[in-house]
Image (cartoon, rainbow, N blue to C red; front, side):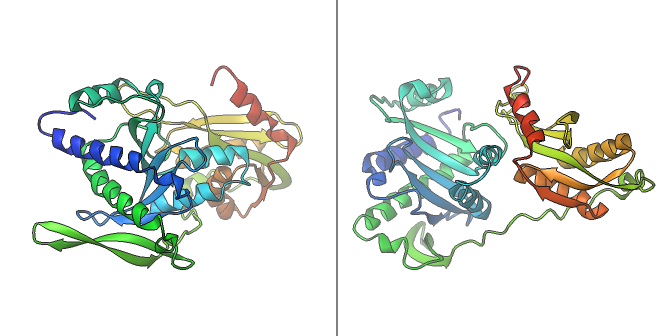
Length: 340
């Protein structure tokens, strides 16, 4: 988010659009369930727009990116009954660009440098423009020039939709399962825009199609099957990690816990790219230490369920989802530890 003479116009246009959206205050008549789309004229990527502010706490336009972003929105919208660790995971896996309006104390050096470069001055509560990329597993971070250019059309069309919906919410919700998408049409050197309705993107439950390395499975093919259970938990750690100047990320921690004793058998921190292979390898190590393959794996999070599914299928193990098992108190001890 470094503003130079070459990219200054992009950022100027972006902040002007963001300020216009802020001043429209469309959260006074739209809620975060009034989601609609805007198709980018250059990439055809749809930004699904969610207006936040109805409750008077967060004032923002969330632009969820494509079908993956829409699914993260739906996951969040339906997360009210989820377990606390799963709620944290859903929050950390939102996929959007967020244009938020905050107080001065919530802005950072990069934001203030942008305001200065653009000659902008803000004052008052929820007036400062604060734009971040929210990428699954990463700490909210500054956007780049391409993302800034993408947002300009999205915000401008969000203003149009909000204005049209002020007196007629049916333009956003004409019928169940149908979604408004503002769609561009090329007209000479410019674009015209029209309302087009599409079926909502299909939200598909994530299925782990990953197969387990057969050489890894060969290491335990001689172990006996034992009618027993092992607990497995997998969740995000709440504090981000920053390596050099790279974007901070949230690590995940996997715990193998003895059933009926709560003793931690194994612990593994994983990064975003290496997690699945490490999980499989650690399961094999635990079975080797146990000198048997238990018939049941008890899990307490959706993330654990997805991670254990491939090896459970390969070994024909039963998976039991039961967050109330007392052995999972070990997770709270890890979260409360000053080491993390």
